[in-house]
Image (cartoon, protein in one colour):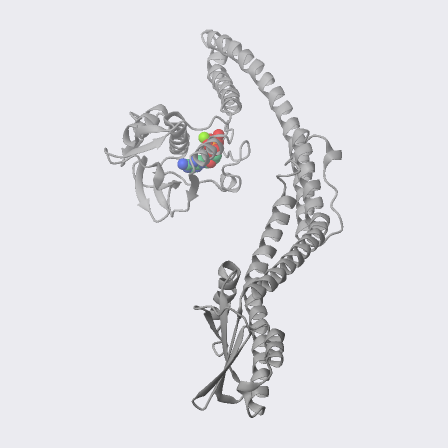
Length: 469
Ligand SMILES: Nc1ncnc2c1ncn2[C@@H]1O[C@H](COP(=O)(O)OP(=O)(O)O)[C@@H](O)[C@H]1O
Ligand SMILES: [Mg+2]
């Protein structure tokens, strides 16, 4: 289980707080700019009022000092310049030491980038500078007002504004994430924790049916997850139980079969001796007895083999396919067979990367079936023959085995590839093709019967990646 600080909820909350703060930063810049803009506008407005007053007075230059000083202080200004129709007027604070340089802020420029840069400029460098605010009277373009004032008060106000905004954002982020935390943990994290906890416990004891999760009544994705998990755990539970029973049965069969084979082997020795008795009746019956016992031993042996060929995964190495096919045909009794011809059509250079033993067993089974069918029924018209080869198809490599025998009997067709069911011949187990298919699948391949007008054809489709050259 994830610890308290590595779980989903912490990740979600951290993401939310970071996103909210990032959004606040983005919002902060324009709002600081507009705060500064309106602050400056207020000062300019006072300057305009002062200029109007000057305009109304006939002899502005000789206004009482007290009056002009009050006008200027109310605007927080050091000086006000008023230009119109080519002339300009200046009133300035008495005893103010006029700065030589001032930073000009033109209120007529209003594009957002300039405003934002101006606000940042004030915040970073506005400690001791003097501002020259330039603007015009509304609707009177030719009347220009300039207000000269220190930047420090603006900066102080802007700082207070920023701090308030920051505190507000922080409160907002905390409240939002707290609300979301409660929501997320109730709706998501809690149920997911329950599910993961259940999975962990169930995996440790999958045979305990009481650990199967009980789905809630939710109908969203989590509800589906709960239902699917419950169904999956129930499936696993019954599959495990079934598998255990099957394994027990299999063990019992193997034991019985083993004893049976030993007993049959003794009977075989006896029947061989019986065959030597010089009695016409015995001479007539003995071969049948020997044959039956041989068949029973063969059956017992192949069942034992099926049990033994446990699910060992293939150990692939590079093999020469032509030789492998040749050996398999030999082992299946096809090479050197007096009545059946065998053609190996695999090119000599062909190599595959497969498990040699398992792969050979696939073909031994196919060849043996073909031989048995041909021996029992003969060929349709030509001389009996079996042929194997390889071709490159659109879906991969196709290895094929074909004979011109009688074709699959209908009974075999129905349960082909099903262990103990697929046999349609006396003494057959129906294991050959089942084993062959299993081995093919373990190699990522697919073994199938292909319908042909005459004879029998099996095809093994292999991924091209198994090609060795
Ligand atoms: N080449 C073939 N020609 C005709 N019938 C075949 C051929 N291959 C398989 N069969 C039929 O398929 C059945 C199943 O084969 P298999 O799984 O090897 O089991 P078994 O050989 O033990 O009967 C066989 O009994 C046989 O009737
Ligand atoms: Mg067979």
